[in-house]
Amino acid sequence: MAENEAGLVLETLSHESSTAVVTLAKAPSPAMFGSESSLSMFLNTLTPKFYVALTGTSSLISGLILIFEWWYFRKYGTSFIEQVSVSHLRPLLGGVDNSSPNNSNTSNGDADSSRQSVSECKVWRNPLNLFRGAEYNRYTWVTGREPLTYYDMNLSAQDHQTFFTCDSDHIRPADAIMQKAWRERNPQARISAAHEALELEDCATAYILLAEEEATTIVEAEKLFKQALKVGEGCYRRSQQLQHHGSQYEAQHRRDTNVLVYIKRRLAMCSRKLGRTREAVKMMRDLMKEFPLLSMFNIHENLLESLLELQNYADVQAVLAKYDDISLPKSATICYTAALLKARAVSDKFSPEAASRRGLSTAEMNAVEAIHRAVEFNPHVPKYLLEMKSLILPPEHILKRGDSEAIAYAFFHLQHWKRVEGALNLLHCTWEGTFRMIPYPLEKGHLFYPYPICTETADRELLPTVFHEVSVYPKKELPFFILFTAGLCSFTAMLALLTHQFPELMGVFAKAFLGTLFAPLNFIMEKVESILPSGLWHQLTRI
Image (tube, rainbow, N blue to C red; front, side, top):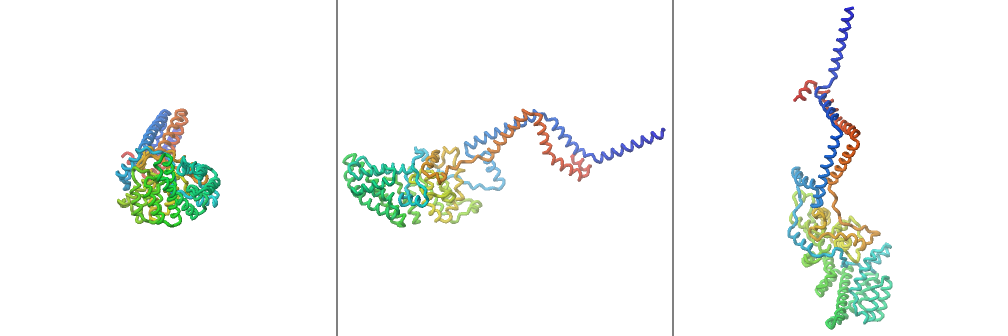
């Protein structure tokens, strides 16, 4: 009996010892057991209040960052985090900043124009407007589309009544008929009235109307304008002698002067369209000398376009030196022609890769600054010059700095940019950098007075929106970090709210998320434990 009990005891002890040995062989190392137990103990000790405090604090911090980023962007037009990254981290990584300081003289000079009282949405007569009969109507016959809006034609009717009529028109029957003709909305009624006036006597304004609207070719229009010139010069000489005899004669002389200037300018444009460019230049120069005070017609813009066609860049520079002045209103023709001349000096050898390596030379810097100046004045022009947007026929009236002016400029000047080798390439590489220089908000302006906010509305009245998408001012996009912090703030605020409302459920989700997050780390540690000897791993964990 005693022997049986002793045998059972020995068998039991041997079984327990073997089980202990197997258990020790399968047991993890102390370091592994410590890491898992400490992680599980840490997760088990976290209460729902901790998760509420954690998510609430994260939401508060991200909200404060969002508010600061938004304030900094509204004041300086850039992200604070991006600016710090570019200013401090980029030099450490070997980057080079090729941005150059602005020319102080140019900035200060053009900034003076911002102090002038500027009519935001003043509509100007297009100095290069086409002929209705010979050009606009031919477009309508071919495409079936109306290139001119009712608003644009109504403005032209008002211009004609202002330039070609006066209070004493009732004295002469032909002038009385033309006074009514300019008010007619129906084109055929206007043309019939002009013929009726010519049946009574020679009338310069009647010839003008027929040349503009009835003539189907430029050659026919030129013949009618030449007839109008003969009559207009006689009326001008007679009224010039009587202009001091009273207010009525003074009004007649002012009307006759407008008629004569208009006829000569349109004759010069006919010569330009018919290929007699040198003759057109001479006529424009003579007209500007004879009537130097009539700047409302902007004849110098016609002259600049003709000189560019002749590639007479020295004379173009001379005209710019006279009209690109602080006291005179700017235009896309002035700004972009100045940029073209400066780009011409460097564009044939310009390479963006070489410029990024060695930096910009003085001539290249001047060209880039001139392009930035032009783009700030009218930001819609580059897309038409670079043929990123399709052109349409320019309207009879334009809004400076608007899409209508950009179309009118690019329609006539695109060929001049293409003629200068590399000019469009330089424009393509540099024009978008302008918007990084313009302060934000846009009311501050930079080199010019602030961009009018009503420009888009006026352009939609001037341009045929049925088949043309009006270009709008490029708006600054929100920096990435503002969007990121806004998303982070919203996400953490939602987590804080859910944790406050459902603490137990969110605690389970948090533990499951952390467990999933640390699962790869635990897997790697198990693999390392299986490869390294247990004693070595224990010594390393102790160290």
